[in-house]
Image (cartoon, rainbow, N blue to C red; front, side, top):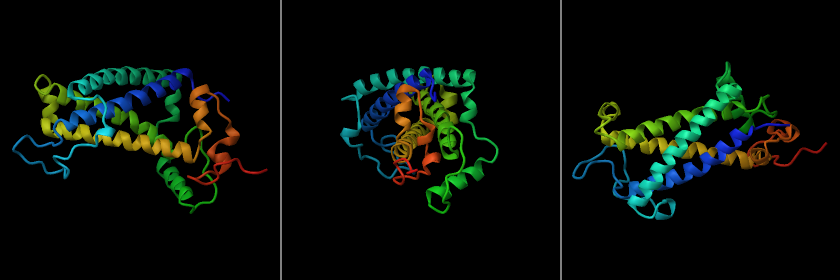
Length: 231
């Protein structure tokens, strides 16, 4: 069956590439001054001050190169995100992503299933409750990343915004945390795709998906029941 529209597939892969470059270049920028306190000052909430991120996790080569990549990918992510959000709103796919009534109960049941407390996979639509919350949260975290990034990019011109976040130091700190949260959500997404629903990977390329191979149909948990059930 048809599962993902071409616009969803294209924006997904553009986002994957742009986010990877943006995180790597952002870490390279951070390494130019791997602390949050101003020189000579202290900062309460980062115990690794002065310790740079491993170079193999960064991108851009040097500070100026990383800044150029970072700002370029910022515009790619913003435009790509707006296209995606406009499409799912106009196409009605937002209904598959927003939390619905009973979401707390549904999350609890999914967790019970993944912890093997519950034997049968809870009924779901296109996405289960945990997926709904993750996919709903990612655009919100993305907006926070853009807003905090702009606050530290233009701290003088946008002083009210920067001050709202507690000043330049705290705005930079919140930007760092939104990046970590985006990375965590992305890693969790990739982990669940490969361990629970690997059959969804071709659907993000071709757009088509076999419902008989869905996690619900296979009663699939992470690392368990990866293959279709025997008849």
